Image 1 (tube, rainbow, N blue to C red):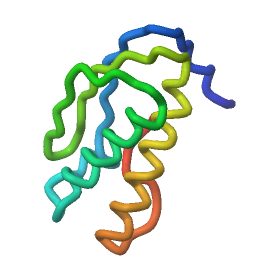
Image 2: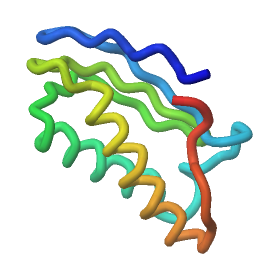
Image 3: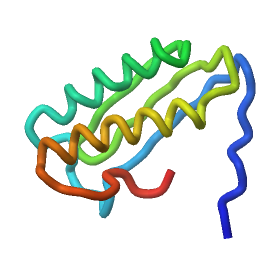
Length: 101
């Protein structure tokens, strides 16, 4: 059964968090934290998000952002897949990096 679609709004402020798959410390590996930060900034530019705050911890991140357009889902999909591909190249692995959506 597919997930229900996320409700998105224009000019909404979201608190987003996601954790490494199996709660692994993904951001402690090499330059993974910096790679994620660069991908986050690119996502903000690409999707017009206003980044209010963020923190990258060893196994998860928190983001507070505003979406002038209702495009959170599309942007988070881009962010997770872009970082996931870069992380997997870094550690020479395959598969998803984050648990859940």
